[in-house]
Image (tube, rainbow, N blue to C red; front, side, top):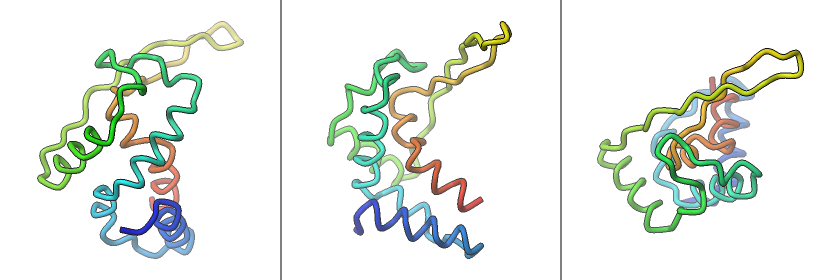
Length: 120
């Protein structure tokens, strides 16, 4: 497998050019992308906020990444629901904020979101 930075750069460039991103699902088996995603999330200040399942980002391990990849490969992975909370804005109103369950946040991290925003 290619390194995460290379994969994301290629997918981003294809998205910018309007080219199809084929075999995108196959990239969900790339362990380096999960490690990059975890690095992005763990360094975030909110990483210790429990998600819908009550777990935080500090419980990640390579064994869990392997379990997620195997579930993806066997098409058995199911996303957990997002916990909805409301946070106050400066104008006094409340805005909704979704807190994903631990594993979901690694899979749908900013690394993947950047790809998705360019692919869509």
